[in-house]
Image 1 (spheres, protein in one colour):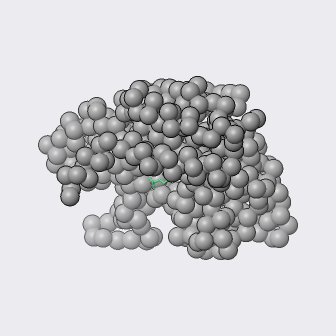
Image 2 (cartoon, rainbow, N blue to C red):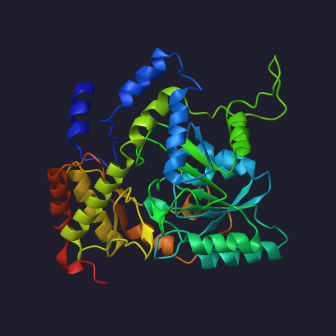
Image 3 (cartoon, rainbow, N blue to C red):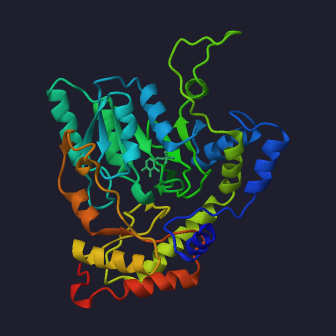
Length: 384
Ligand SMILES: *Cc1c(COP(=O)(O)O)cnc(C)c1O
């Protein structure tokens, strides 16, 4: 049973499997050789330094997931029970879950069409509405979905005008840039994910970008059970077990040596799909000044029905293809919350598809996928 599944997994063309062809094993072995497999060690220090340099930011804290990074960023902003958080609706549920962990209330903001991310017009509408109701939101969570940068200039301008900090969810956007400034350096805090499917991985992991060494120390304190400085176990606040292990940081350390290669391959995969099947489908272009890491290539079909035909025929051919993130304001678990909606994310969700975009894809794999895409019904092909 197990053997046949292994063979099946091998032949299946996956959405975003990890690429572990570098020095991952030697850094893991080093962690074991030095007996540092827990919450401190050389791999953590070096991985954090690599990220800090790559993002050109003050400090980076490695934690055990992107979700816990968002949780700690909200805590650092003083978010408490009953506070309201403005959150991009078109995203993975992990963006909003930590709001609920804290007993705070998400308010969902729909997308604009150019980047598929948080619409600044709706964001301002929501801010004005909540302030009028006597409840100024505590934070904004904006997301660079699929690696495409959100409208950083507009969102930051609103953050400054209304004095509401932005948590930048760059989970999918390591290596993306706006006017050459790295995504992950725009928010008051930013978070990154190193989950197995992301552009680089530690198996499970994440990071928080923050502004000073004092902030970094506070994040590490919270992420390692908030132990006070005392000979016994003394706690003055609630802590979390969120620190990245030195073992997994070894994987990240090796992956960082290949991030630019990964991005260039991802971008080639996007170009290849676009050049081979454009006309039948619509691809999201980079706005002037934006550079996407193209974590996943996405496309839009003319209708939900066509999207389903394409998705099902890919699946039948042992190719993993998934619909886009379902907007959070449509999720059963989040439906009850207030949202500011223009219909964009719902439409994109109904017609969009994520295509296999793995760094290890072969020319042959790409041709297999595009040949099936090319068979989409001609009378229903996309017209701009
Ligand atoms: C993956 C992801 C997260 C969560 O990261 P984990 O490391 O899986 O906890 C958060 N936001 C977005 C947009 C993501 O894609």
